[in-house]
Image 1: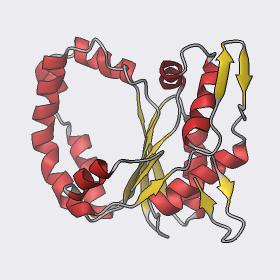
Image 2 (image 1 turned 180 degrees about the vertical axis):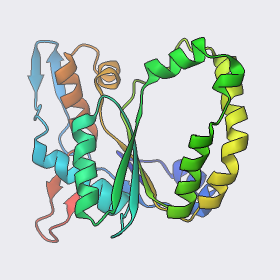
Image 3 (image 1 turned 60 degrees about the horizontal axis):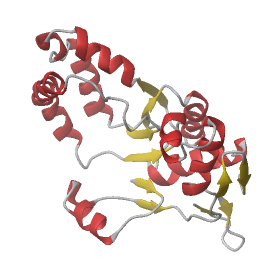
Length: 231
């Protein structure tokens, strides 16, 4: 599944060609636009309350990933979202998940690995990594990707070296990926990070930029008729 602020018809056509078109797409309604007159004046910013964040986490888990009772869950997230990831993990357990595992990503560390490791080391898939992949094949966990990273987070990385390492690792990982393809649930959800938000709203403070990005893309409310979340 994919949770996004919106999509164009062309995007749907592209998705039809991927994974046999089996996608659960949740469109987010933009309710209250943010208007800023200058860097010192803000209009319409509403700080994201913890209750709203928890509701978003529930939406990701119950609708996006459709976590089942007794199922394992694997969350992949950036290190700038510990609080929200905890909300998602709790929502998974409340949905009946047997076990929730979190894999943290960090662009700065990825760049360091690419810079200092030799190509053969960078390209190696260790035995413990293959064991993790086999466990994924055996258990078919629901996978949740929390996207919040800096769009330019890998800027300056040694692209030829890094690309070669990914290609080499991909050959080893591919059979495991194919073994789970179309057999498990997965979803991608956006959560505003400071660096991402500052690129969208460079004239605002980090806190204001994050709030503005939340408001621009993810505003929740209760549907008074059906009692269901609308995003």
